[in-house]
Image: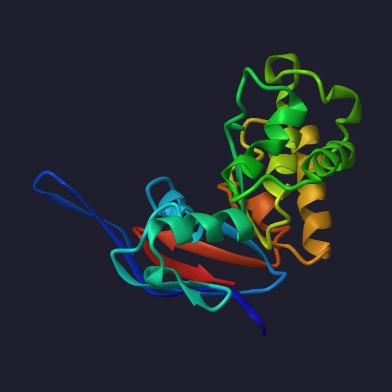
Length: 225
């Protein structure tokens, strides 16, 4: 199996006054290229912290995290940001769209953080808007969209740099069941195209759709299936 990412004995510890919180406790997990993972566990189990480490937003306080055989511990903040922008796409439960921008402009936001905006960025954004079913909404602002439509914008935004890894944090949590099913269909389609999907969810029915399941409890791996 070709690895796209790997956690090796990773810990993340926070010091809150006199209290030490071990959010992640010596976790080792290999993630294969093109796999579809569900990350599950009760509230406070470490899911969000794990996603932040996987997304290179947060650094481990112990162990090593590799992305495409690159040890992220060896990278400075600028190099880490470039790796994150090139290889990882994020989708959030709260959408995190910029209210003053149109659908098309929101999709193009990640291009602003690259060394130079892609010359074909506008065409790519338009193609992605069409792919997620929003070709007739590209000039609308987030407030003019339904929750499902906003999540589709967030998915298109995550894809604009053609990342190999998609991280989704409770991406269907604010959606009705029909819309959630449509969003999961998009994830399955992306996975069939070779994208590695890491989806944080508390819903067992969603976890059952993934190829592999990682369960956390108290910052430790409770189960890998």
